[in-house]
Image 1 (cartoon, rainbow, N blue to C red):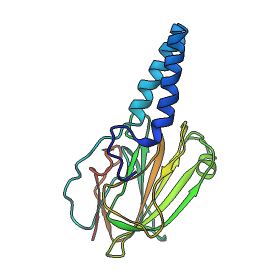
Image 2: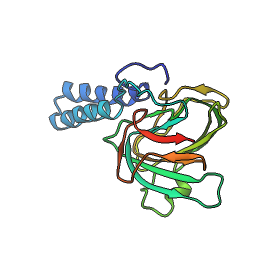
Image 3: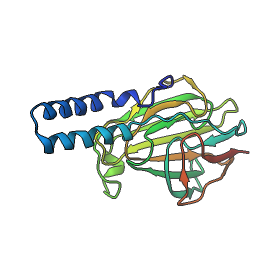
Length: 210
């Protein structure tokens, strides 16, 4: 994932290929309605799996950027917890699906759980939906946990990371189509976001460690 510089994410090649083959098949047999549907599907998949190249702003060493494109749903503060703040970002089909590292760090742990793809509004979604939790630790021992959870989606969460691997801020590390991302931040963090704000992966500042 990190080295994929093609305009389309490699995770979408199979889906796009099957849709294109269906378009060709229906074209040969002159099934115009299904040919049109297959063509629309090809265009839709090309849009969903787009892989834009982005120039990351030059933030300070202790900065954290958004790992996803989306809208900030909530910002919560905890009194007694390992993490002091929780930021939720909602992503949909119109947002770029690529996941990018929020900071230059070492991967402390990855916990992937396959599951359902229920609506976020379902009371069971937080327990049953497919998700992955990634814990990042920077060179100053600051720790950030990022949880990606699917909503209704036709593809799995893809993560190309391993425990103890080092990653650079803004580097691609996976893909999630239509999901919710939760960022857990420690007490020594200053948040630079507001509820309702639109954010872009690797380009929008979440905040700084003090």
